[in-house]
Image 1 (cartoon, rainbow over the protein chains, first blue to last red):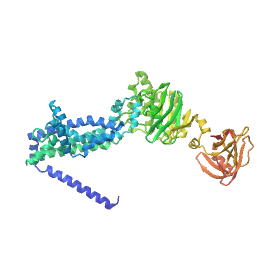
Image 2: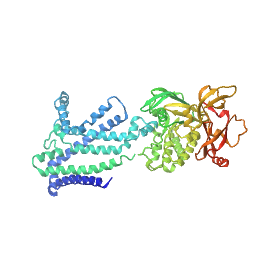
Image 3: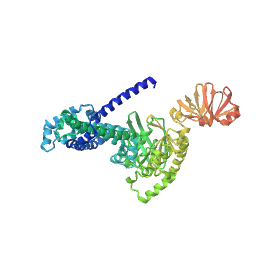
Image 4: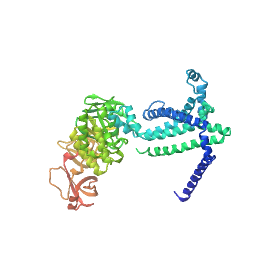
Amino acid sequence: MDVSFRSIALTLCGLTVLLLAGALLSLVTRTTPHDLWASLRSEEIQFAIKLSLLTSLSSTALCVVVAVPTAYVLTHKRFWGRSIINVILQLPLALPPVVAGMALLVLFGATDFGRGLADLGIRFVFTTQGIILAQFFVIVPFMYRIMKTTFQGINPRYEHVAQTLGCTDFEVFRRVTMPMARNGLIAGAIIAWCRALGEFGAALMLAGATRMRTETLPTALYLNMTSGNLPLAVAAATILIGIAFVALIIFERAAGTSRVF
Amino acid sequence: MLQVKNICKELGEFRLEDVSLEIDEGEYVVILGPTGAGKTILLETVAGIHRPDSGSVLLGGRDITRLPPRARGVGMVYQDYTLFPHLSVAKNIRFGVPYRQIPRAKCEARITELVGLLGIEHLLHRYPGTLSGGEKQRVAIARALITEPEVLLLDEPLSALDAETRGKLREELRRLHRHTHTTMVHVTHNLDEAFMLGNKMAIMNEGRIVQAGEPEEVFRRPNSRFVANFLGVNNVFRGFLTPGKGLSSFAINGLNILTTSKVPGDVHACIRPEDILLSLEPIESSARNAFRGSIVEVSNTGTLINVHVDVDGVVFATAITRRSFHDMGLEVGLSVHITFKTVDVHVF
């Protein structure tokens, strides 16, 4: 790499980092530590923290349960319709979350299927379950993609050998594939969780933004920002930034070692 | 006995075409062939990883064509070791134990025995990532043999190792085979392995087995130009054979060679370089093929020296020791005599 190209690249990199770090720093230093602490202890932010943790952890768990076997089957078995399924599973990745949320709202709010479910007591519109479903819908593609790449990176010969040693398909999955995919699973779950925690658009459409009811951290930020209560908005943002920072460090570690095998 | 009967299989760019092979219990068979010949798919089809499009696989008279790998009684060892990276050596070796009904005491005794035979006692607590290639392959072999497979399939087991380790492990494979009497099928593209390990050899090319038999026999009498070239047999000539009383005459560009073969018409003949005697003066002997020619090329192969002699436009490769080469003072352009027996001319 010649010197002029390297210096241009370094300059661009430096400017970008400065911009990102500057923006985030100006945000978290907007209030005094004392005010921030007070806001964090407010009833509303406490509620948002709890609801965010509950919904994001639920949707991430659901996502792992669904995306891992799906990615496994789609990398290991050849069947008709495999490529179209592959596309559909990743569609939410390219879709604006608001559109996803609207689609879910129509499905569960304005069809016989949705009304039937509601009659059975399974309601998604303007409920906590709705937030979980919206998050799930948006994060499945991330988990699916990471697990697919992880499974594809495992030499099938490991599985062949395990089969000749006596394993059924499920035992191969449990004793060989999953342990070898461990880092991919960790990385995928962290990314999925981060996305779930920050999910706003789809959840807004399906579950609405009702104070102290469907108010997650991003919703709290939005509600307080629009009503002019800046300290509370900043508090919500600060928590999200903090979590993102820690999660990314863990992700980098897991992803960095996932190529060991 | 392992019987592979008329197996056909297409798998992406690889394929097997009507492959049949019979392997007796306790035999050590080496399957040789160039890259892409279909050797690995053949092994994986025997192991049950691929289901053949047609044909069948029988083991001890039992049709196992449709059985999953776990129910077949075959062990598999790959070139790239495939030790489970998240398990210690001991756990790798014991991986298959829970699936086999082996009494505990017998199992422990077998582990101790195998680990001792392969000299890997000191590695048991280590993880695969910290082992050398040779150590990894020993562990992989132990892991496969612990389940007492009826057949052990080895896919280029020595190809990823350095020359010294390869030699050692080759010896160990031979010892293991003598000790356990397990039927072994070993795929390689290395000729030395075929000759040192195999009681039987099969040569594959483009998805087919082109020749099978005892290694010595295949080497002496290749049945095609491909086999001859693959085994490094020089002196493959195309010509016309006219059967005669007793001996036949094989004409190559006007040069007549005598042979015991009776296959008439357009055929190939080969003569192994080691079977051609090179001398400065004509030799009185029972060998009926004697020609005078001149040296056109000299090449050094390490242990032997290849001397190419042109006889009326037909070039014969001969191989002599370094010592005789110097004693005879051979050099390019020198006039020499070559002599070989009629039985050493193999026609196909």
